[in-house]
Length: 345
Image (cartoon, rainbow, N blue to C red):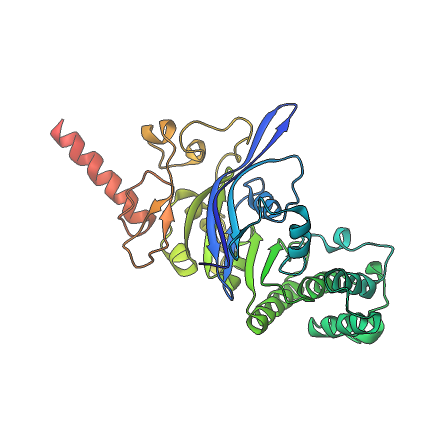
């Protein structure tokens, strides 16, 4: 059994405008020492899914199962969840300035986390651990900076402090929700390198949520592509980048700036993401898909095995032929079958 196994997770919110179907049937697993990348446009359900696992979506209607070491995170008691949150499962949020309390020193906040989960720890021991963790994540002069307030840290240092707090109790699972979005390229590279090093040292399982496929290329072992609250494609990193099957995945990859596109225009995905209140019929991506067929407008596809079998984890929710190797071969097969139909009619 994997460290975390999520099965058919569904999350919805009742609003004055209608029911928001934020997550619709999400399933994945992650093992110790492995990284799962969750990627997609804003509003695709990436953050809501992991916040639900942490029980941070009050008022939501939730169904499905999320087994962490055999215990269902969606049904365990509040007391048990408080014990797990921070100690066994930690989360790094997108904006560290809003996650760190502005009126308390950074070191004190790390110390309180340690003492809350291990009441037997003395104040001196907790302070020593806080200084150790700040030094581990690259904060200069941690014995002095431990007494600074969050506003005295730069953006990169605040994110490092959040990582120090998240890893203070050596959690088995770390969820990073857009941890480098607001940082410049140099600091971003330093943070990602730090997370890789600490993951290797502590054998931590990592879920990396981002819209940046460049970050996923650096970090992930497996990748889950989300669209309209639902998984569109799941595969190993190399399979997904070199042989994508779903047109949405192909569109994301084509929109990445590269050396080959310096003298040409980027190719954006046309249209807008769907409303999670009024979802399109059939495949939710069909209004934006250049390969859409009549079946796409009527029937909703489910994740099924795709590719040539070289990656047994590769699955795609698309009506294009699944036995083809990559999207180009799949569309060639569609054209061939259409031509054959035309000759026989």
